[in-house]
Length: 531
Image (cartoon, rainbow, N blue to C red; front, side, top):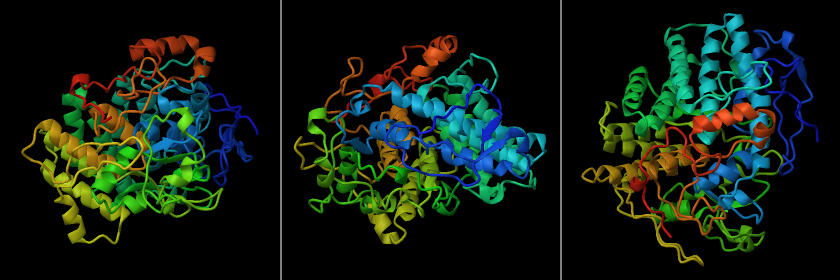
């Protein structure tokens, strides 16, 4: 397969990758994906063609190229949505794999980050004010995923044409995120009109009113990240987001349109069959008699029943025999390879998530426009109607008022219930008990967004989940959470001075135990995972 040759240290390479039609294809496990054959020189990118660059930044900025090694074998496992069934997939048991990280790190900076930079540059030069504001919002979306994975990353100096590109401190990156959103929101609120990508915008087709809601909702998400590291800033940004207008209905959910050429990102890897349902989420869904269960997962082929695997299986217990005996993803993510998932969109941020964010904010005493309990119940209702459109009001109410808890699983490990948290909101409970309820239901609603779910587990400790069956990392016990992803080894060999500077900013070794800047909840406050 062709190699991706673009250097991410250049601001605009001579030949910039622009897709006239976005492509898909098998990643052939961990080989590099074919480079697009359609190249457009940078002097040909103008107001008429920049939309194609933005479309590329949208789809591939969400990790579409290496979704297996980037998300499925990292965040999805640590969120405990899925369990790996392949014996030599080391990240399942907390052993990092630098080769995998190299693939998606280099791809991000060589391709979607370059397209993002190009989009902002061209729209600014051509005074495409609205398009430039929308592009800025998208920069925050794709870069926050990267910094939340690693901590300090290459950000403000990307494309500096130097042989060494310094990393930014995560605190500074978040400060710039909020500044960037301020700039974008000012334009989106002003009623500015003009070209805004049209159908090349695969999220909102250039609709400024909907982009405004997304920008504010994204601000609320990032504000909550700061709850344990800078509570005052978190409150200010969260209340600003609420005041400027949020995603309140499923009709305004931010989601990437799926087509034959832009398949649902999870669907890109379901033909591999290398993962199955995690016991943690299965314990909750089955215990709650959750109507989303048949949407999220499929029954096991061999039994017709819903079954799942504990995370951290030893290599000797993994293998192809696990696949038919355990639940895979739900029908909407399945299809004939290489292009399933052409109808269901890739969800980015929803009204349900916004409601749970407001519930936590209200619990913390912030002005969210309602009570924690009202937003909690709203988040449940929005998630169920999003995933199960046929659900009735009576069914949703029955779920919201249920005292059911996650269930013990009839598996070889005699797994007890994942936790003892009922659905019915306990407004008289302690702060931690109410927070655990909010985040547990939020975790269910976020599926299959492992990126966001893992970030929330690190930030809050919830849901407690099951302990790994075993860890092969001497520095990270099976009862602990992985706190970050290691840096790409290529940075050590090609950007060593900057890499060393990144470790100083990180404040700890480049391992999976070092906590990122916003991950500051006292460890003593974390629940003990269930054995």
